[in-house]
Image 1 (cartoon, rainbow, N blue to C red):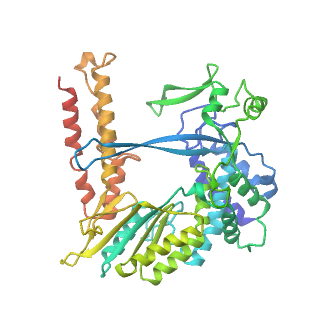
Image 2: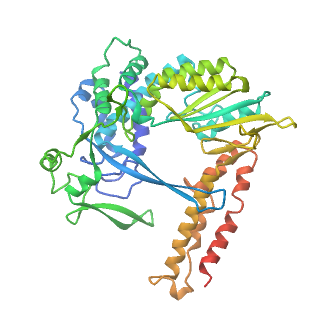
Image 3: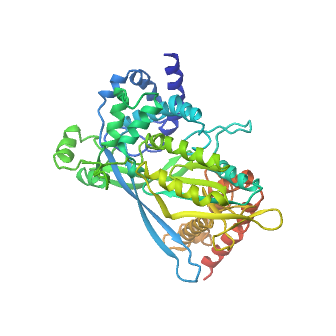
Length: 498
């Protein structure tokens, strides 16, 4: 009982950061779960209510689960052409599923429970706690507060190469359709294993309920729901902490709503407009060989934890192989990196591809990046391609040439595109027909632009990049950003010159 109370208190503290601390009726919140669903948003102050709910597994078994809301998010990727041709634009669609607010708390609790009470101890027992670096809080080992980030994980691999006296090869591979192709039976077996149960046993009733709701999940398309209930999102400017911010505020019948079934709607409308209209759909992912359903949705608070549990045996087997060959293996979600001797490269690469097939997954050869680190005659290892052309290793958003680390050129280009886009908008607002500064020499509010794109700020790209420069060392990233002041100044001058 004491262990449960301690664990719940830790979860409550962590989960409160995802919820609003204000009244449910207000939109002004930085809460991660601020989306509307069939039930009302939860407040941080309501979490204590679940202490008695989660204590008894029977409460989870009888808990009603709303269908997920499905949304397709569009991501535009722009790739520069090396031969002077126009840049290539690729539109990628990512499907995300949102759990109802109460169900999200249930999934969040079981994610935390599995991670903290079981998975953490299991991977330590298996000797792979250093291998799995995504979706976990890994304390810094330098005595300072806080947890490791992707920057620390990248540094660990880069330092391994730097400190390697022998020539080596690093290959970074991507697993195709990771979440969509997870085999349900293997997930169940690994779930049992992490709980310390045998494969002949059944999952505990509450865990089984979670398992079934995630593997046989039901969903409705968010856009179809909004259409059936006449929900529109209006952009409205509101004051928050003395600043004006724009929010997408959901409205139905001209009134602000805080859930899909907010007045004048009720659960009866859910039955008539959703259930009877046949809008509820099920898991559509199919294993082409087994001819059965597979995969879990992306977006639920427990999906990431289950993906780590799913890969537990794979991580153990590959880490043993690579370690025996005096190499290093790390996995960040669906990204795998192996650094090994040149002589072991082909064998280990093939074994990774063979082993992953046992888990109904496939390595994406098109996204496998291989870098040979060879002696440059000056006592350093320098990156080359298989055609002996100088090359940088790409890993977790960074480039590494064997000596120095850099922010990836794509990330830097994206930052400058965003900076120019916002600057262009600011100039348009100053010189446009609706300009509010016509009587003040079409003044551009440069202070906000500078603060957002040139200097350190909360969760800004510059803060992240400068932190990476400090952790990775070498001042190379700082040098990459050195021209940002001149670039913005020249761009403003270019757009304001008539």
